[in-house]
Amino acid sequence: MSLQKYRAWNVVGDEIPAHVVVEDLRDEHDGLVIQLRAEDGTVGLKVSFDQVVAYRNIDESYRHRTWRSENWPKASMLVVENSHWVEWLRAESDGVLDEIELKHFAIFTSDDCIDIVTKAEPKLEIAGATPT
Image (cartoon, rainbow, N blue to C red):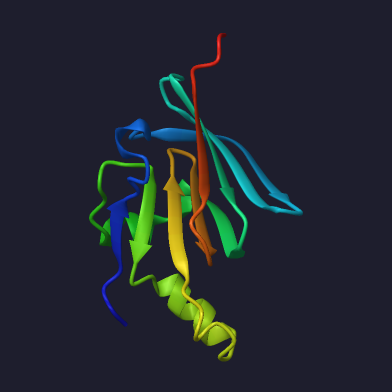
């Protein structure tokens, strides 16, 4: 098994806040939609995945082995390279996923650890702060 590595997900440069919270997660007909906002409330993000192979959401308090074993960039939105979960999904599919390029994205907050494996890049929409 190769060494799994996390790197910051910088698809739109510095516009992605370092720390986000999950406002909503919906598994819809067209795909997975995750609404996020910066912890300070300044930026809202909508992340849409339309070719999802699998996703999981685990309470962060149950990821002790992960927190102990990895070096984390100071970011909530990550790309996972050499993903152990992707390796497991390929084995579980008994060859169906062997020739398909898969990408593993992770959104880690103070409450949620969301992992998404997809066949395509997600779509991001960024909005300014919502008046309170």
